[in-house]
Length: 195
Image (tube, rainbow, N blue to C red):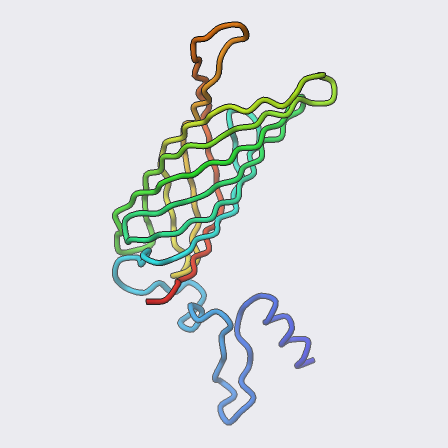
């Protein structure tokens, strides 16, 4: 039974019982769990020299959007993020990849707002019923979001942006901009790089 409990705790990333003199002592696989599952250290949030991984779901226009993001914060107020999103729809689907810049002013507490802007490409794949080649377009995105920290290394993340897709009508040279609302909700997992 003790081995089963240990395996469950390992899987959940929680505590392992100590097998020594003090049976109340716990060893945590995630150091941020030492003071409790929802403990947040005092002071402003630390962003400098941290990686962030963020899976998310949401909408691009009226269709679903699934996104994976990876960010690096070289400074406490600046972050660079790469994002890969998939927008499945009934007749066609799209793949978005963007490079974003995040700007924030770190506050004390759980609520951390930020602004985001980015550039990338959207590739639209027609469905099987349409005999057409995939089309790639430039995309500009701008907006902002809010992170709500559950503990020092995990936060809920909500983001609202405008995605501006630049294209052209067939046979014309003028550029046309299509704007779609993009909103996502997910988690952020932070890891420090030391120093």
